[in-house]
Length: 472
Image (cartoon, rainbow, N blue to C red; front, side):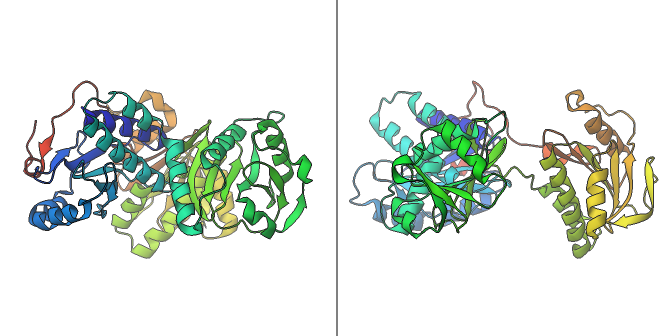
């Protein structure tokens, strides 16, 4: 019950922070126990070879190494273990004298700013499991609640640890409090407009080294907790390279100088923004919450399709760069559009505005023109040589049974057209940012192995049963 409770909390929390996320646990509660697996959504499918190598083939060496590490360690002390490096997964492994070994896994989504907060999330799950397991009678919903709402604290835990390890002293600024201030500012409008501009927080000892454009008088410095006032001050750095500087308690001044190392940076961009530490982007924020997303679709499925096609690698790479650029531009500008990538030897004759001659998208002027064409109703027709043949093209085809009326005419027209037309990839960009990659009538990036868990929870298997494919 402890494991199921914690796993549900991690999964629910990560589903809010990232995309829908499966979670799995591999563990042995004592040195003599067999390794067991709790994987209710088949997250570890395809990784059986590595698991067998580590925990079966080299089992004696693995167990002896942990026994030596935990010998004499105090209760509650969790010793991080080496990451197995399973492709596409984020993991945290730990061992302790009270709970011999555990390793938590979740999905590494391609659009994550950083995996570090998620690793802290899994570390917290491991810590809570040791506590709940050894306490004997824990409040059953306590750990579940903590992990469901752990996003801000996971980010703060990573930032504090990273700053302490590199700067060599305890941080003088309260990072969780600062993160809450950032979210509050992002939700506050000034004359109807969302916040834009940069604000960074650095330790008071670094203030003297910053080259300020101007500083506020010491006894008149705006208090950072006065959210409305700080929101007004952001107007002074909006749409510029200027930045507000805070020591964690007050806004000290305005600068054009380089941001100090390991400073906490809030980049407000209207209805969303990004949180960084120095040069490392940590998370995005929107609607009063932090998220792992870069807010840019990675288009992994499109890249794989082009690389697996008959195009040579250089041509496929060039085509991907051109198309992905147009798609991201449309997404950032919040307008819907459709791109047809036609890989037929003889290009299709689509009904629409045919360009004579076709325009090469490697020319910057033509590229800007193509991005404007994407705002016009209908599809943009692109060939493998990175040329645009037409725009405003109509896509038609016979009805297919897997249409989704909730997705609208643009999406379903693309499904029909793709299902009845060979050697074409259709990319549909919705005005509210979702991107669909459709090939042979199937939305490739709409396929997910994630499914919600309700009342039924599969029982825990031994690793041996898991490796031999036992079905419950």
